[in-house]
Image (cartoon, one colour):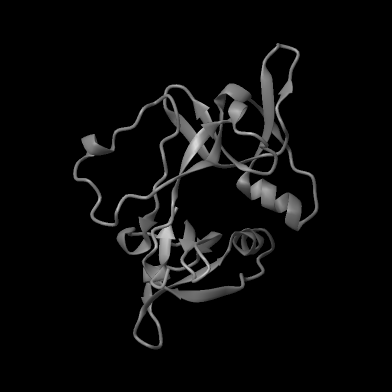
Length: 193
């Protein structure tokens, strides 16, 4: 595509952990009926049967998952029932045409039985982007696993930009206080997951 910067990245539809394939080291959503969902969690095992006859998956917070890799130290895991685990980035969902979000809360209602689809949102339409997971448009395609480390600002050329780093650097910054390797990016190329 000649106009790669006009690409709208796909969103994600979570899939039930029992049918999602490999789970280890992937982002999952934990579901607690009715309708409570916890994001920023990683599976650290494949499903296994427990003594109670129920299948479980061991999980950790995203922060602890990165800490175990950055510091090379063990972190405590928690078993979670497989029937309440969803693979976060299960299958791509084509994004709607860019535009204004639908008006009113009733057009945004979701079911409490499954985590909702996660369509991307233009960063310029999100009032607080610092700390959020983002997708950056590049000529070779959308780049994921990035975090915004600033709010939008005017760069030296007078363009609106936001500073971006890899998720690994984001967590290393939190865990070791080593500043992230970050770079400015034009805001129009950034989408919030």
